[in-house]
Length: 298
Image 1: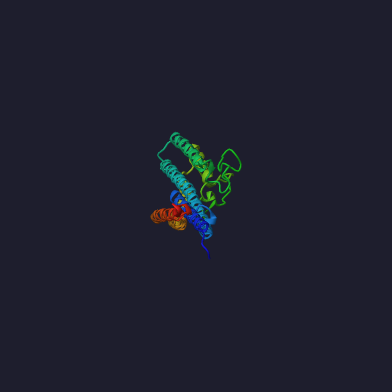
Image 2: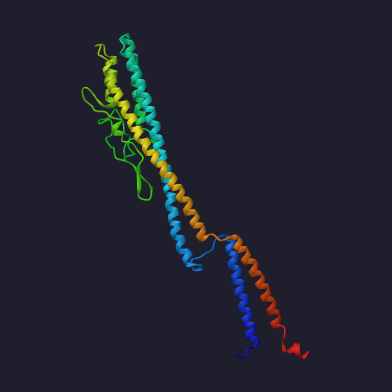
C-alpha cells in the first residue's frame, strides 16, 4: 500500500482528536467524581446504578417512616405515663376520702380536684402529634374524647401501621379502647364513667362507701400499664429494625459508590498519562508535517 503525505496527516489528526476525546472524558470524571455522565458511557454501570439508587431511595423512605414511628410511640408513651400519674393521684385521693375521718365538705373538695384530674385525662386522650389525634385509631382527624357528646368516647381501635422495612409493618399506636373508655347509664362505667361515679359519691351526703372505687381505679391503672408495656415491646422491635435499616443504608451507599464513583487517584494518573501521550502525538505530528518538497529543494 502506498502511503502518502495526506494519509499520514489524516492519521495524525485522527489520533490527536482521539487523544482530545480521552482527555475530555477523563477531565469530566475528575470534575464530577463519577465514572459515567450518561448511560451511553457504560450501559451496565448505568443499569446497575438505577437498581442501586432505587434500593437506596427505599431505605431512605424507611428511615423517614422510622422517624414517624418514633414520634408516635414516644408521644404515646409520654401520654400514657402522664395518664398513669393522674390515675395514681385519683387513687391517692380516693384512699384519703375513704378513711372515714373526712367531713362532707372535705370530700366535696376532693371531688372538685378529681373533676379537674378527669378533665386533664380528657386532654391527654386528645393528644395531637403534628395535628393528628394519636388515640383515635386510624381516624386521626377527629377528637377521640368529648364528654359533652354521645357517645363521648370513640370506639375506633384500628391500628396505624407503618412499613419500617421491606414487607415489615408495625403498629405505632395503642388500642385506645383498652384505656380511654366510657359507658353511659346509671351507673356509668368505664374510665370516665367510674371517675364520674366517684365524684358523685364524694359530693353526695348519703355516706356512700368510697373504698369500693379503689378496685375499679386499680383496674384502669393496670390497663394503662399493660398498654404501655405492650407499646414498649413494640418500641424495642422498632429500635432493632432501625439498626438493621441503618446498616442497609450504609451498604446501599457503599455499593452505589463502588458502582458509580470514579477512582480519583486512578483518574489523575490516567490524565497525566494521556497528557504525555498527547504531547508525544503532537511532537510526532510536527515531524511528519515538516518534510515537504520545498524542504528538499532548499
